[in-house]
Amino acid sequence: MATYNLKRFSRPGALRGIDPDHLIRLLAPHAQFFAARGVALPSAGRADGVDYEGLARVFMTPDSDTPPKLANALYLIHEMATPQRMEDLMSVCEGAGIRLKGAADPTAADVAVQVWLQDPDLLERKHAEHYLTRPRSFEYYQTKSEKPPALKTPARKVVTALETDLDGWFVKNRRGRGSRVSFFPKDEAIWILVRHGQPLERKGVIRNGESDSLVFRAEAHDVLVYDHSLGELQVHACTKGEKELYRKMFGRHLFGHDEFFPGTAKYTLEPLRTHGAKALVCDDVDGIESVKLKQVEIFWGGPEKEITILKANDLFRALESRGRGLPEKARMTRASFAVKFSDSKTPRTVTIRPSNVAQYLRDGDSTVAERWLRKRGFILADPR
Image (cartoon, rainbow, N blue to C red; front, side, top):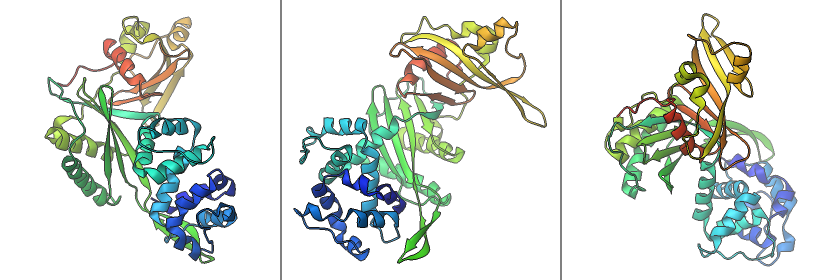
């Protein structure tokens, strides 16, 4: 964990949001570090002696001596100190045997600190689960298997072998060792979080009152989803190399061979051109009430790589009003739809690109939207 995450607590106000007794317990294992930086931690029961200004100065100027465990704890506490995540943490405390002490109305940060003190693995796991819910783009790979196999959380030895092979690629590509793969079963799919390092970075810091530099390797988190019903691996990662790595390595270690998920295209936008507004029919799909085409990106090519973006609240209606349609020959590279899901009063955007990319505002939208896309021909015939 990069030590610059401590800067999140470089304001005394943020530290005062944590019950003083719990704050002392959190920092006490690192008392020598704080003493070396000129801050003496009070003993238990002496909460009135917390030097908030001094602690803020320490967190403002991290260096290579900053304990990684402390940086990791404060990073997770900060990430989980929101009203929504506080509610989630409190809902699992009783089942995990965690008793929240202190004020009757604790702050979100105070709840996160107490969970860390009593069960740090739980706080890290809940943080990972919340990370999975953030909007993101996926690339999709479908197996050729006629009967897609189900997938349970693999045995530890399988995960270790997978992490070892991932580390081999990460080291070769200057991202270091230490990848970690976590599995989260969810409905008809299993979600997978991959933590790994980034290329080294260098930051300016203050060390012993002098300007210096700190070299560190930041963390990255990639998300994969295996859908049991479709035999499909969904991959969210930053680079083409990482996506190809996951396609092969997860096929190898979880299903037996590298090409279990062939890298073939999944989506096409041709139904928009061949069927027009009829391609948006959705009355045969439970969970969707209406679909409107909002935007299409057209790639004309040429030496200037020309791109045209057609955009309207209802693009087909706008084109029809002017006696126009979509271009017959130019390549459509992206389309966005306003989809009115049955669970919401407000339409949500679904975006797809030919090949393997789709983006949803909510993870739960993908299952329903995929059924509609498949029925209307936006999903190519399964490669199996």
